[in-house]
Length: 190
Image (tube, rainbow, N blue to C red; front, side):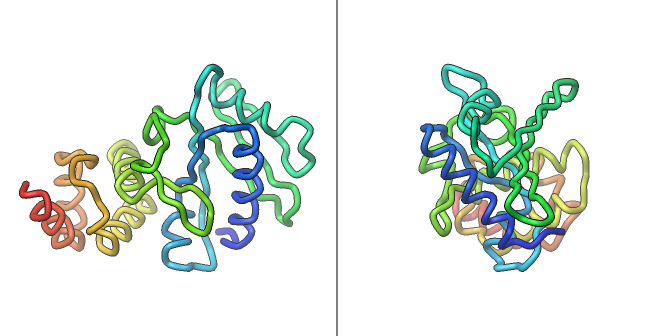
């Protein structure tokens, strides 16, 4: 677990560098529930980056070229890109993921929300992405994030963006979200 304030400092610096180069991005991961719940600790932060003419990884590398606050780490054998924010101890590592492969393909006002000036995936897109991860890996931390988002922010979940069959499976495993899921379904007359 990492200090949420330090993660937000790193995310803010990365967001500033990406915005200066016109690179569409939004944050995702454990940082969203941490920010919404005002938790002092978080377990991860991921930055979803839009492509464009160039691959998202190249856009991030170009945006951070010559930036002394970050080190870029490319893992070619796993097709992963990480950036380390060097101004904190310990250093904060942020994973960069391509939009469309992880999260929505287009990051705009319908798929993102702003909290304290930083772009994050919207609650619907957060639940959708976490649910996809949970269906593949079954990681308890992802399930906790889904439970938090659905039970506390059910009125902001777009039923049409959440795979219903996956959510039914999730509700069977985590009945504590059944009431919130039913409220979402009623809201959309589903």
